[in-house]
Length: 133
Image 1 (cartoon, helix red, strand yellow):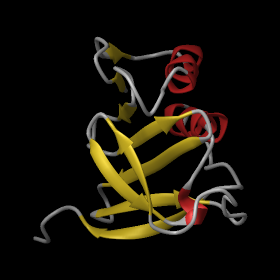
Image 2 (cartoon, rainbow, N blue to C red):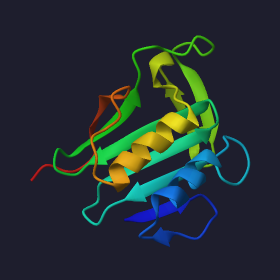
Image 3 (cartoon, helix red, strand yellow):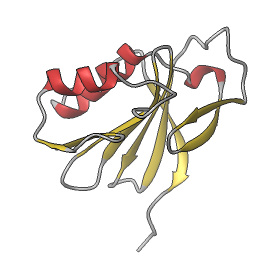
Image 4 (cartoon, rainbow, N blue to C red):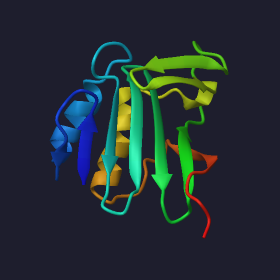
């Protein structure tokens, strides 16, 4: 696995502690606003934002899809269509796609340790990301 945080050196074979610390240090402003954790096959998680304003996506190579995490209980402070601005750009999110950094850290932990996804997370298909053969 390879863990990368914006504007920090990549880490090969990171520990769960290091990944969690990296996710909890993200902020949607400044130099460290997104992170990725990738396996050797091309599957990855992407987190953007920080604190209580995070977004989480994952790439599933086998399915050729990009999926965005959402929760059953939407955020009350951000309506559908609110923009998350971070170092790599801007995304419009639905109210149920806003996550907290601890929720994102739990998902990164699951991916890193090949455990089941946290029960509070669901995945919404974002469409094809790989060409069909």
